[in-house]
Image (cartoon, one colour):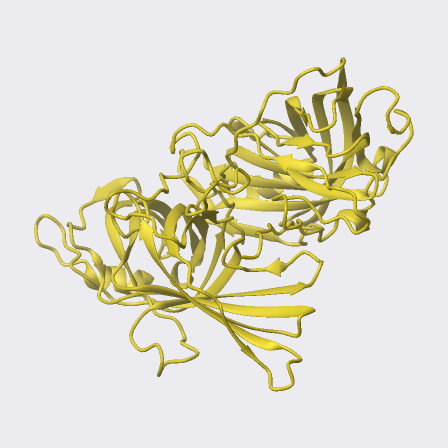
Length: 528
């Protein structure tokens, strides 16, 4: 099997994205404690950024502070502590948020950090969250985010540098009455300014012992330029690390959120059990993403949920002249939540009829076999693969709140049939089902891009929400037509992100893929 990889976002996308609810998850991993670090260094760097707000581009300042060791032994993790990202938004940006009706804001931050050691590079994401903060009447707004960040392990002796890249703010907005605004969340992408001191360099740590091949502490060594860190993909050995083209081993990035229980990991339990025992080709993986609801001009965030996958054997058919081959693979999967084939309950808030805030709690329930079919071609140098995930799922509404008042919809409120998508091969795959598509490409010796079953990536599609049935109040009032008129219809865009799969059937679990109790280590983050 091909070793997994994780896509890394490059330069900031120049748009502002909105969603019904903003939610943020961290990656879970076991991080060994750093030992023997000789002294510490304090990072305190103010960096200029250009951010795209609803009214246009605005300049913002991000001050990053952290504590790191000055030196570690080769193979010893570099732990970064006391990390804060303080963002000062200018008055025009604050006015943009106020124009959306916001009185309070809470932010989740993402700072892309380029890691370099000689010619070997990797990327890490430093994440943080702020407390709810009131918008000032006038003047700028200062937000201070704190959080855990990945550890980095140098694989050879020499100076290891960390350089700030793109920065993003996921802003959850609340009105003065405590209700979400419309939109309830805004994502702001920021590009680092050209005037950043020392090219955005945050810190340098010496790896190795005295007398080794360390570079001088004060000399820049392989600091990534914007072109170095843009669009990098990880290699096939270490999740999140780029391949090295000259034989050097890339620094290893290990996400540093505590492993703990499923609740602490910001994702439900995802492991095989007595009802769903693992087989010889069993994988599990988390998926999360957004689904648009066109009629409500909003999107629902589906938080991370579990899939149990039985991977099929790849089949090869060689061309007559042996210049290449086609590759097909058929796998099956099940949603999994508390021994049921469904997602965990999730909530989304919309403005019904453009003025009434309505919050729905929903579940996606699997009603038939879920399949994953991949078809690719290779000339033994370049390989491209198209993967289609087909899942018959109904949408069940378990509760509604209209303008803060609960509305009983009964125990059987659901879509009449499965969500449906345009099917590229209806004769082979009849019936109602959701279709998501992912494409992956790889050149031999280079990192893969896009979606692969093992390493995950983006899956997109378009869905029709069928009419609702079984929705009624305690007094017997039928709500089917109301929900159908508000929600049902075609052309709803869906984007789901699958995380790194854990191959639970391996003789020895890969710690980069799996936790000690055989759950997926990678919890993906939803993307718009």
